[in-house]
Amino acid sequence: MSVQPSLRLRGLRKRFGQRSALDGVDLTLEGPQIVGIVGPDGAGKTTLLRAIAGLLEIAADEASVLGFDLRKDVRALKAQIGYVPQSFSLHRDLSVYENLRFTARLHRLGNEEFERRTESLLARTGLLPFADRPAGALSGGMKQKLSIANALLPEPALLALDEPTAGVDVMARDEIWRILEERRGKSLVLISTSYLDETEACDRLLYLDEGRVVAQGTPAELRAQVPVRLLRAWGSDPRAIAKAAGALPYVVSARVRGPFARIEIAAEELPGEARLYADFAGLVPRVRLLEPAPVDMESALLFLSRKQTQGTSAP
Image (cartoon, rainbow, N blue to C red; front, top):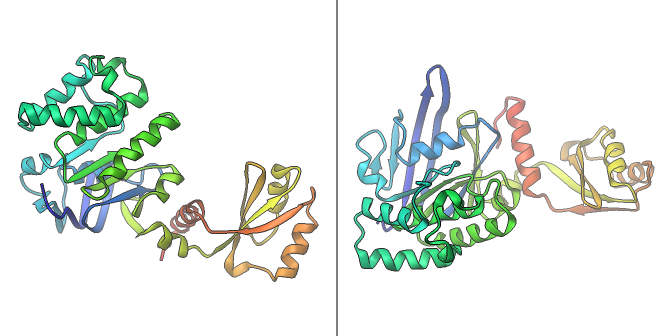
């Protein structure tokens, strides 16, 4: 295993026929960490993960993953990477234990080491009572946990997961994230996700759109780039408040969030405090409380999305 997992991409490109899926990806990552890959549908997230895992033929000016060149023979690289695709890809007719045994043989793990790692992984994922159950008979959450356990079995230097928590229940999501956080100091973990709370849990984020990395940084760094002011408007009918607030000329967006309306205002169009509070006091239905809120990842990702839609690059 690499002592210091690393990834260096420059001008990474991938086409499927006439369609460009990756269009000059530049990316450098060093050391163990959790990196979230976010962006709209069709942005190239799955293609990027598959390329990094050595599953696609690519073109690039530079493409080094764990010291291996993606443009050359990547068989040795695959031995150091754990990959979890969106759809369940393990053998459905084999049991949980048999699937892990099959992977252990591919990686030439000795019996003693296999048993040690398997017992630990099954215990951590809650799959130990289901070791003899056919993989195809598992629930969606258990299938995902088996996929992750299978990817972790060879103790990879790099773990790539494509929407691993999509469609699973809250308990399974929490268990999956506990497993990933255990790997934070040992592996470079790349995970694509559409869940805002998961983006906050990452050490670093990449915002991908139209096959390019258009923004990257820690969650705090991306939030700091957002030129909006965020407010919460409380009242008896937050849905109606959001609709009324959305008609104000300086409001970028207004949405219901449980008992309050979440209001975004463009910083360059922010009115004075007196006008702001007067405008909201005059809304129908009445706003009982207007309070500032810290900029969150929803604001950051919406800002990046709007900037791309307008045809400009995020800072």
